[in-house]
Image 1: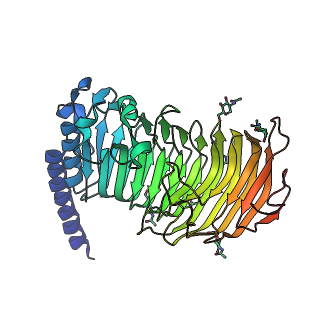
Image 2 (image 1 turned 180 degrees about the vertical axis):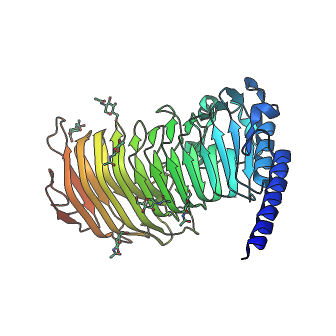
Image 3 (image 1 turned 60 degrees about the horizontal axis):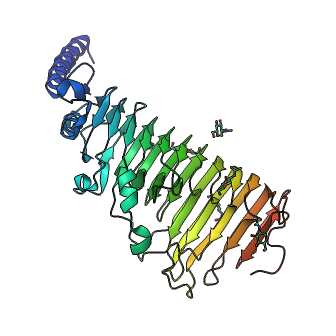
Length: 407
Ligand SMILES: *[C@@H]1O[C@H](CO)[C@@H](O)[C@H](O)[C@H]1NC(C)=O
Ligand SMILES: *[C@@H]1O[C@H](CO)[C@@H](O)[C@H](O)[C@H]1NC(C)=O
Ligand SMILES: *[C@@H]1O[C@H](CO)[C@@H](O)[C@H](O)[C@H]1NC(C)=O
Ligand SMILES: *[C@@H]1O[C@H](CO)[C@@H](O)[C@H](O)[C@H]1NC(C)=O
Ligand SMILES: *[C@@H]1O[C@H](CO)[C@@H](O)[C@H](O)[C@H]1NC(C)=O
Ligand SMILES: *[C@@H]1O[C@H](CO)[C@@H](O)[C@H](O)[C@H]1NC(C)=O
């Protein structure tokens, strides 16, 4: 390029940037593409419903041609259902510094499946240290899941559907009416330092549920809740779970699988360096009896510490929580290439390891290494129970694993 052309190009770019800047001004309030919801009318008094203002801030950010930020600054907000819908023109950051509360009345959240939804967004960042409080206490009382077997009538706190290349960091979810955080059909999403808190007796309040998603990393989460801390449903692929503390809660689970006909395989799960305290299960793989064929493979669990966990290692292919299954037919979900390495701590029952695979699809390539679990109860040392599995045992373990005849 000649110097004249260069100068022209520079002027042209300068004019272009002025135009872009003035457009951005029309779109956003404040500098650098930041929209503070309080500056556009959010009351933040903890009573008035700020949901429409917050969603309108999202819509402005989402239509901005350059990355922009919605700021929910410090304060207490009340908000009804919110749908943060994409696709957006550029990446969007949502910085939640405040505490957002849902209405406790379920009827005020009936309009959509989750309280806060992000849909079809590429390049989302959700961060800021703030919280989403589902105020679920009333809803838990009305949860009739155990009677009906249908558990989808209550809203999840935070649901991400078809969200890609995104980062969720330093966010707290409290007292959800149902699942706390749900990822469906997502790709390349990291959840870092997510905190989840609900009482031990809150029904079906799973911490983080992943389904039909590829490339999900969950690191450094602190989860106390009434159901599974992390559950990986069908179609979970390349999912890493690291540095999660769980308890109270029901442990970290793959499944349940095999309840429905159109389920996708689970392939590539790593759970590492997690601590579970006072939970009924540690690491659990669960599939329903009488299931259609399915696949769960390449699953590796290592460096797990358990404290007073009833069953630290559990494969349960006869999972039937509400006792209304055809127990006589076996599960046909094929479990293979599974390892449990370096587990240590205390088991609250003598049966510390249960590998109950299906006679309809015996487990294959199961490996256990360095399993050091202590049971201090009246009935002696920790032991194991096995069915339809011939695991490879290596390293130093404190208990006999699948030593006797199988049950
Ligand atoms: C995954 O998402 C992150 C943003 O969280 C992005 O920086 C990275 O490039 C994405 N990776 C791929 C392979 O697209
Ligand atoms: C998730 O973690 C794995 C292993 O630590 C890493 O290889 C991968 O790049 C990470 N993916 C994302 C989306 O951060
Ligand atoms: C293991 O997880 C804990 C959080 O429970 C974290 O503090 C620690 O740094 C992690 N260690 C490694 C080696 O990743
Ligand atoms: C062990 O866990 C059980 C629940 O499984 C709980 O009732 C008991 O208090 C716990 N024990 C300790 C010492 O925390
Ligand atoms: C078992 O799983 C690991 C990790 O996903 C994978 O690298 C390996 O190829 C798998 N082995 C077989 C035999 O499929
Ligand atoms: C010990 O074994 C007996 C007989 O099997 C059983 O009734 C009792 O509940 C067991 N105790 C514990 C703490 O597991």
